[in-house]
Length: 108
Image 1 (spheres, rainbow, N blue to C red):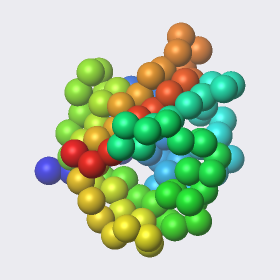
Image 2 (image 1 turned 90 degrees about the vertical axis):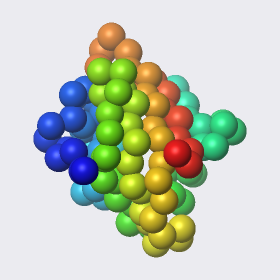
Image 3 (image 1 turned 180 degrees about the vertical axis):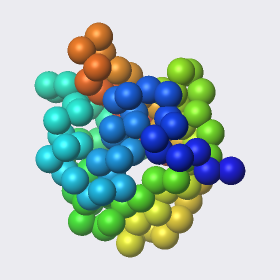
Image 4 (image 1 turned 45 degrees about the horizontal axis):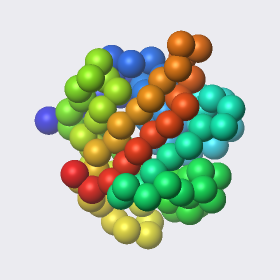
């Protein structure tokens, strides 16, 4: 059962999903704290390169199936033009300023 993006509990995570699905790189970058980091399948990646390759040049799209940790962990179907669709897990660290300082993703 897909959770509507508007119903996601955490405002920063909700905005992250909206930015991904709208292919809005500028809005996406504004959600990130300075020096934000990320990992894919347990390995740290260079954030700007990864998001361009995995999200913005390949039409990434998230459909959230489940959330936990107050909305800061998602299980979602993620698809892009490179890999097709896969079941993924997303974990977010959100600072006191409401910006995402780290996200980790990988197959669920």
